[in-house]
Length: 169
Length: 388
Image (cartoon, rainbow over all chains, first blue to last red):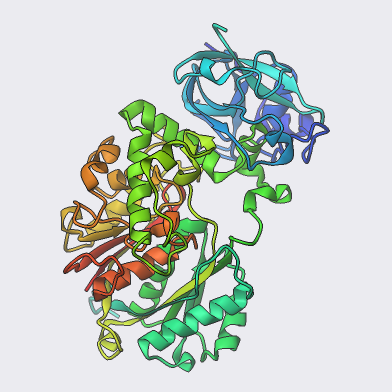
């Protein structure tokens, strides 16, 4: 079901550290990756959705962290996901919000359960196209259980975030 | 050496002997430090204990008045125990629990727990974009999941989807709290009745949560005084015993964004509840009145399930038929709670629990002798069982 990157986290974080953070030119918040999270964003920049897995016992974990909660190994790798999932829940935030978000409100925030790793639910936005606005899908099109697929959006700050498109728009 | 020592027990070993508070308002002119001192001194006066006898303090990590400032301002004596508990409103009951442990094990004699906060006139924490924590905020905030209402809203929507909970169930919670506030002259919403029409037509904050699903924004401070059970019997009021205490940080829990485990709807209340009931002499059906943390209405059904008042998925239905009103199955948040009295990270739920067991509540449950008080569900939490 997935491809497996053979390099360990130790290697990837040094060579693929995602830089960035702070406010983006569009006023939306950019991710501020920590050491453990940086590879996720580095892979996203390549158009790949990968999650951290234990290199010894294979257990996937999210958010990324230094060691495996199941077998305590510090060796990890990043397993490629199909990018498919289902909406587990969603909200429609209304003001008061930070100004850049208020400008697009009400927008959606979805929680997507990954088809390849059901315990991992990624927070994101359901959009009409990878680079479309946060409010580009009408709220009445959003429902719990709807199948979605990952898309990749490069933010103004240079970091790439994962967004979601309806499988059946 | 060699002697068998019984484990020190907390059960009924300590009691809350005094409670105090400032007014609650959208804006109070005095500083958080001044408000803290006023609430603490009021609590000591209520107990009839001199400030110079205080030798222990407990508060929240988010509390900005520290022990050094408080101790020297109120004229405390030599202090031998002090600690702070994390996770915002999840720490409320733990402040009392930590003092109970300290007093029961002989580390201190007179403990003060307090919370002072100008959340009404001060900034909303989520507007500070400089303090976004890399974990877990890197996974949530860029997408516009900015506020606690958004984070809990995701769980609320899923709860509605899985169990058929409706907005009417959340309204039942909001209404019960508002009705009690309408009986409590100290409550911010004392003279503001709530109707179903007002609720159903209110503006959204984060769909499915509307204005009335969210707690108030309050300036105010509260405190309580804890002493040994023996000492409490010599104080001014009937002692309110700390019967059982627990904290709860479940395995693979992620704080308010608890989205990455087998079952996000099984929150910290379940973990705290197992420990709480294990050391108690009574069970959920024996609870006369409950003070359940209500930063958001959906936390009530989730907590009702976690603390064992009903089965998983039945928390919404539990609220039907006036169950949370005076005379119902489980009178709730009898001072108005965070939704309608004041939102001071849940400390008013502790003081209201004490009032009910003294028999002095503004919406008194007749003959109440047992009370559950809980801290924030959805974050590492804590809870108390109080009895008279």
